[in-house]
Image (cartoon, rainbow, N blue to C red; front, top):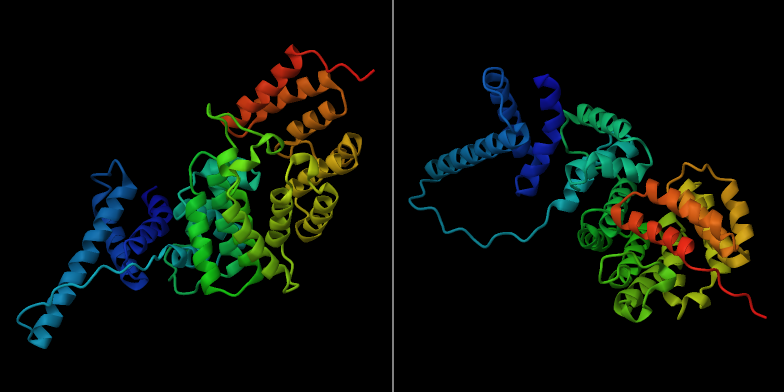
Length: 385
């Protein structure tokens, strides 16, 4: 039992030390010393918080080693007095840690899941929701990833694509989930864009900025969700929109289209529309067609069905929706919206209530419940004479 727990905690403790400024070689040595001590102590006196215990012991081992090395150097150099320390370095190792956790020994999906858990601070449930899999399945995936990297030297950083995927999921959780990680994801993506010349890095940064520009308008004063069509566009951050569009245009000009650039293009079309009614839905459908080609994602196909419903009418949207598995998250909510647009209020009300029961968070559940109540309590609009 202790062996499994120690293996699972090894990359987590290593990540904590690296974030504190310890280089990987020294961090590995300190963590290994802590593991040896755990094997000696835990059978007779197991800690209440194994992670905190390992972090504390590893940190102390690092400090002891650093002090011993410093003392040895002082003796060797016959230095009477240690010089005063300089200013604390402002270098942020978080982005480096993202790369190192995206280890080549892991599959991209396992590397993303492990990094989100160990570095991003997301729960297993949040990660499972992002991947559209059961929580138990994700817990097993993360455990396997931890076992794979246990004892592996973190000296072979992962690739940019995996790190982009992690940053994208961290941003999405911060934007629509339970914790606020969006600003941190943007900060790290800016660092990555400054260090790496890659169109998809620019595409992801543009996408984040364009979504973040609308954040102030996404919720009402009481905390309830405000759909895109009802948002006060005067509250959108025009500075972020201008920056995001400029970054996107530069990336698209390189003719190396990727999914983040295509998603950013959709966000830019929404940002460019003075009103919801003036949104260029035809062009948005075309961009979703590109995204389907690039990803074949069920979530992309779901969003495309909404766009088709806006561009070609709700029945066309329902036809596109019918081709999708109804277990895709928010499928029922989209069906409710399209049925309401088609004038079928009773079906829409029933589907809104059903969607509320399946909602991924409290704000979304409340919004869908209110939509169902609105249709059940207000009379239909009077048709024009």
